[in-house]
Structure formats: structure tokens, C-alpha cells
Image 1: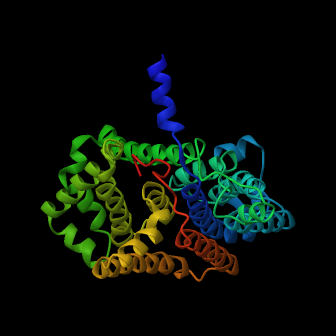
Image 2: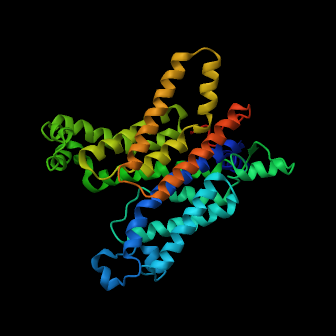
Length: 364
């Protein structure tokens, strides 16, 4: 029993970096804030309507139906989204962090449920919802926050590491791995290995007009290879827990998969899922320190390559954000995220690195 308890504590409550957790908080709330903007336009447009007026559009998801809630009144909906935006911004900046993240966890997930009740529900926000729920239960505002600055002004100190900094990121890692495992496993269980014969994907691609889709639809071998790659990626994703270097295969692979599917079949970018996967499995908090170290030791080419990769990824994310003419709330969230990111970079440059392994170091 002692060994089991020791393994359990090492998995979930090993000492982790509070700086890394703070950076993760900023990124998760920024992703979630942007993900909240899209359903907002749908909810506000139908707010105050009865089920009969909305017609077939109102199909409440289970927990909304269980609460007996219909489309909210317009004034209530506006008050909810206003409170939610304020909570997002405060949570990103780390001001009254625990209260702000609690509001986001409860109201944000409920708001997504309302949005899904007006259309088809998707699974892309499941791991992000887990992330939001973990934030108010963790010391996510101990570092990279205005709360931390205020505490420092008052002469209070906060340790750089905590045994409670590990489990939120670990839990989301597990939820992401299970999401992909179930996605790949369900294809095999429902359709069998025949799903990978190429004809299924060919049939789907034949209805698309994109050149890449046409190329796959006209070549069964290419469709078969793509099908096998998808199943292999999804069904074996939990292997990232076997060796942490496998993240460099699986995480970019999932990003490529979702973007490739977006280009060829247009199911949507699924950005919340692959962005959550990226910031959860990689040491994003160590990027400034890595660049600074490479520059200090004269590794200019490495800095250039890393810089171009970061700029390219940022350009991709911003391109998706502005694609649908985002409202002002999205710009506010992006601005708040930028300010918080600058605080994080400043923290590292001043010589306060995350220290040791970040949360989930063996898996991230």
C-alpha cells in the first residue's frame, strides 16, 4: 500500500513550478476566453426567445436540460457575458485570481452549454473545461499575477514550487490522451479495421472541392495511408506518458491532423483542443529562458529557428482568431493575455526561472 500511495503522490502531487502553473493559467484562460466569444453571438441573438420560437434550434445539452433552463432573457444573457469577460480578464492578469477563475469555471462551462444547446455539440472543449475547473482549486495565482505583485509589495513571500502545482496540468494531460484514445478506439470498434481501407476517407473527400481533398479522393493508396496515420495517432496517443520525448511526435501530429482536416473537410479548426494540447504538454514557460540562454552562448541560428517557429505559430493562432471578424471582447482578451505574457517574460529575464521540472515534467 505504501508503494501505491507513493506512486499516486508522485504522479499527481510531485513538487512543481508555480511559475509554470501561472503561465499555464494565462494561456488556458486566453484560449477559453476566445472560445467563449463564438457561442456568445448565437446565445445573444436568441436570448429571450421561447423554445417554440427558437424551434428546432433549441436542443439543450444534458446538464442544461437537467437544470430545466431554457434560452435566457436578453438582459440576463448580457449580464452573464459581461461578468464572464471581466472574470476572464481578471483571471488572465491574476487579480483576485481564485475568485475570477471560480466564476470562469462555473459560468464559462455553463455558457458553452447554452451555446451547444442551439446547435450541434462537439467534444473539442472537454479538456479545456477540465482545465477551467482545476484552476480555482489550485494555487494558479501564486506567480505570474498581479496578486503576486501585490503580495510582494506587502512584504509577503510565496515559494517558487508547490506539491499542488502538478495535478491540474496532469489531469488535463490525461483527459486529452483519453479524448484521442476514445476517438481512435471508437472508429475501430464501430467500423472495424476496414475504416483504414481508404475507401471511407475517399468517400468523404469526394464531396469536397479543395485540391488536397481531390488528390486524396483520386488515390486510394493515399487515402489509406492517411486513414492509418489518423488511427495510429489517436489510438496510441497515451504513449506520450511512456517517454516525454514522444510529445514531439504526437502533439505536432495532432495539430497537423486538425488543420489538415480543416483544410480538406472543413469541420472547423478545433483550435481549442490542439491549443490546449500544445500548452499542456510543452514547457511554454521555459521558452523565454531557452531563447535567452541560446543567445547568451552565441547560438544565433538556434535562436533564429526558435524565433521563426514561435512567430509562425503565433501567426497561425492570430489568423484563426481574426478569420471571423472577432468582436471587441476577443481583442480585450488578446490584449490581457499579451500583458500577462510580458509579465511572465519579464519574470524569467530578471533571473527568476521556473526552477527544476515544471508540472508534469515527465510527460510535458
